[in-house]
Structure formats: C-alpha cells, structure tokens
Image 1: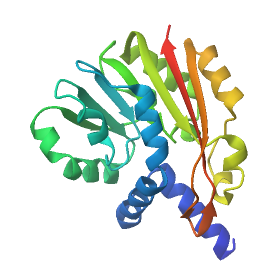
Image 2: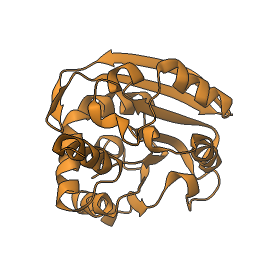
Image 3: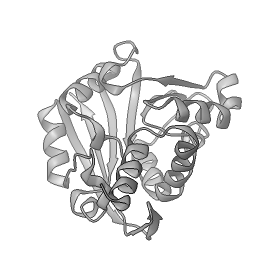
Image 4: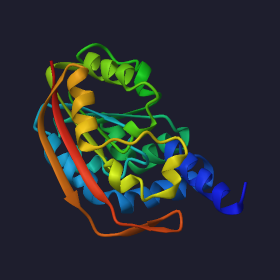
Length: 220
C-alpha cells in the first residue's frame, strides 16, 4: 500500500474513533470543520427548559455549551465510542459535570445503557456513516427517546462525501433521499430537511467544500 493510501486509511480510522495524540488533534480539526453543521443541528434540536438531551458521538464536547447554556434546567448526556474523546470532553466540560448538568459515557449507540424513554431529544453529527447496521442503532435511539421525541441527524451528503478520498475506507454514505427513507423505514417521521453549503476547510491534507444535510424526525 502506498504512503498516500496509508495516510487516507489513518484519517478514516481517526474520524471513526479518535485515539491518542492524533485523536486529540482530530477532535480539534472536527470542531473547526464541523462548527456550522453543529450550529445548524442545535438550532433544529431547539433545546428548551426541562429537556433531557442525548448526543451521540459528541467528540471532545466542544459544542456541549451551546446546548446546556440555554437553560440550567436542560440536562445533557453524551455517548462516544472513543475513550480519548470522553476524557477530552470531561476536561472541557468539568464545570458542567460538577453541577450535574452534563454526563458523559463511553459506549456504542447500538447498545446503550440508558433507560427506556430517558430523553426528550437526541442528535448525532457525522456518525451515521459508521453504523454497520443502522436499524439496530435507530431502534436503540427510539427506545431511549420518550414517545414523540425529536431526533436530529446531521451529515455530509453522499455526493459531497464522494469527493473526500478517505471516505472509501469504512464509510457508508447517504444521500438526502437515502437518509429520509432510512428514518422512515425505522419508525421515525421526518418533519424537516435542511441543506446548506459551507465554506471550505482542510482535512487530511485535502481541501473540502462541505455541504450540510440536517434531517429532523420524530419517533413514532
């Protein structure tokens, strides 16, 4: 395997599960590159007083403050596959954790330890590409949401991701129609679809011209 291919595999691996010093750097890069898609998704999530929010794959937790800063009665739980990201998020949000407003858990979305109906709202940004069987993950999300709970999924659409060479290593890509159909087939009712273009940024040595796709759905 050539050096370029090895580099692309490593980029894909770190995006899937950031680890070690490179993982810390990856988390910081994702914060910059994903700032707008996170802002758009949080706007659609619309946390209000009394909400119990679940975020899946929150990385180093840089955007947690944008959710819980809206009201002290909002509770937040983040789950991430990466121990490196959990530790970074704990450090970044230690004051909120000490207040009891934020809880962080290492784990996978296909087998979450939370009680049925524990959350009013859930969101995940750029994580669905890595779900090997999204039917299982979506069933778990539906289980931990209260009836009629809101789910916000943010991704880069397939046509944009195909321009990123590292996505051929372990990414499942979705078009707008793919994502809407997936949610609909798994007992969610799609209530809103938002598409936007964003300024370019660099990742893995490549200049990316990103687009955001934010799909909002309600559990049935």
